[in-house]
Amino acid sequence: MSEPVTLDVVIVGAGFSGLYMLHRMRGLGFTARVYEAGGGVGGTWYWNRYPGARVDIESHEYSYSFSPELEDEWVWSERYAAQPELLSYLNHVADRFDLRRDIQFETRVTSAHFDEAAGRWSVRTDQGETISARFCVMAIGCLSVTKEVDLPGAETYQGQSYHTGQWPHAGVDFSGQRVGVIGTGSSAIQSIPQIARQAAQLTVFQRTANYSVPAHNGPADPQVVARWKANRAALRAQARVAPVGFLSWDQSEALAVDTPPEERERVYEERWRRGGFAMGGAFADTTIDMAANAPAAKFVADKIRAIVKDPVTAEKLIPKSYPFATKRLCVDIDYHVTYNRENVDLVDLREEPIETITPTGVRTAARDYAFDSIVYAIGFDAMTGPLTRIDIRGRGGLALKDKWAEGPKTYLGLMVAGFPNLFIVTGSGSPSVLSNMVVSIEQHVDWISDCLAWLHGRQQSVIEATAEAEDAWVAHVNEAAAGTLYVQANSWYLGANIPGKPRVFMPYVAGVGVYREKCDEVAARGYEGFAVSAAA
Image (cartoon, rainbow, N blue to C red; front, side, top):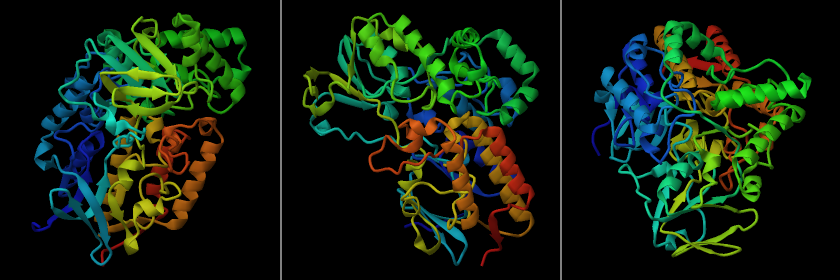
């Protein structure tokens, strides 16, 4: 074992969160280093390279706002940037701010234990290193641990297997192949049209249909770009307090239940033509009232029936088991129309469930399917998974995974009682995945940075959420979720996709603006709900 490295701040992860966190720490004069399991920067956009991978928020909004110079010099090529462009952007950021010299790649953090006597974190990596740090910032993302393939017989399959979250960096050529895709979540909805254009035959296995709206993607609109540049400061300020952290959602204050049917249809149609998440903001009561939700669900169902020529396939593609927009809306390019191709088939697993993966393909209750390749688009152990797979131990040796055995408990989604000086970026109990992640990331990083500067200025070095504040926040988060339709969907928001995971709604639904105001209020009151002290 080498001698321990001593730092002020350890940062885990080199995606959007970790890069900005490092930049802020340097600006405050703290010694900091990022530890990244991958071979380069990018986080989500380093790992997710499956066909069709792209952002679902308009590019100019899904970008850093902390540097006007950075915004001036970077020009997006598409309305919704694809993975290669997003990765290029983050590499540009790393180079522009000279961040790489404080990033250690191909190094996975395996444990982080709090030393109560020293008031420091002892962090270990898979390279045999130990780092002693006053503060530890988990910037590892909400969707960075892929769900394991748990289908019987998977290990016997003799063809090629791929997971959308662990895609080969060299890419995959499916030309002439028989391909099976298992799953119809976001990554499947993006990749299926691309794979269909290559494969000789594509069979999609769907457990639950997903609501998906058209992106209407294309080259960046010069008029939109010009408007954004001319009004950028004001538009950024609006986005920071918008319910979901971006403006193209365009949240209406009108109620669907008070709107005449003809006017509702006109609004839906206009937003469908606009594309992207605009459908989600059509009416203020869509996700809180079934009477308001039903017309939106019917509108999308009718669109699917109009697009998909085979009525049997169309009905299979229409979600029926949960309300509209209570899982994250998917934004697609040619998803539904792909099922009009002669080389694409859809298998409804409610009618013929998978029994086993065989050496040659997939066996359902109805028949055997032979494939040259199988793509598992089965998602992630979201939000808590990236944290609980690291051996994190707080006061008294308490393991985070044990504290969260019945579901995640945090104060503001930022800190956990019993785990001093451990910060989480976009953790459970914050708007996180219900928002524009970059806006939420910047808000969290800025809050953490301001907190550390505040501690330093007062010669304090330990901060910890109190159990009382944590309990009150968890109750508030749960109460907010219970007042919505989100809890009626078996989504990864509740951990429903992971066998044995507690069913707890993890994000904070009250909105980015409301949450930001609460965080600012806590800080203004001398970090109310936190215990602060000097080191022993």
